[in-house]
Image (cartoon, rainbow, N blue to C red):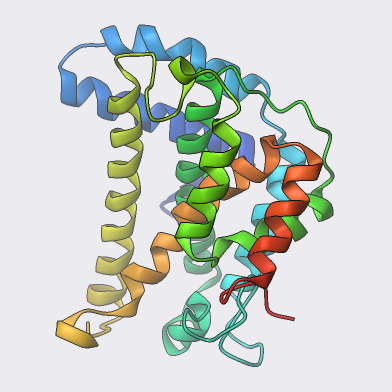
Length: 264
């Protein structure tokens, strides 16, 4: 059963969180299309993703990263995956607000970040699954975490290059940029909209409940930019999970040597 705290209902574990994200995706598509015909087409894809979900490994990676992001008492601005302080960890950037949170509010923040990561994870998982790619390589939690965190804050151009390189090994008709199913672009767009909805609610939460002011260049704040990394991080988590060990290590080293590699 889900964990119930006051008026909050939290998923009991990451498997249930993933199931809720998939359910939310279905609801959004039905609302947008006005019928469930698309769901009949994509359900086998997401059933396959769910059945083969490596819950213990992914939960380990997500928990370690989120724990770092929600650390409001540790020294320094950065967190896992950074070499510079350009993108601070969330709880340091909003330190005053996090220090004032209750245990329930902190749990709520943990789930919000997890949902953003899982939405990105599903985005990449959908691309991989329709290309016939499953998680066939055995990878342990610490091993995947070490490889994954090096990619989260890496320049996007580098990761796009690595992703292109990986998918180029598959037939053109199965390319992620020439998707074989008519519903695929709808699914990917819907997942992206889910993330932006999550991001908008997170920004509004801090803006109206915790009274932060949007500031910065052209009146914009760092917060939306920071939150985007959780979605991209989820995409890279799935990518690093499905690629072979040799290419995973190559990607990790390329990320570390980039200008935004892992903090030592």
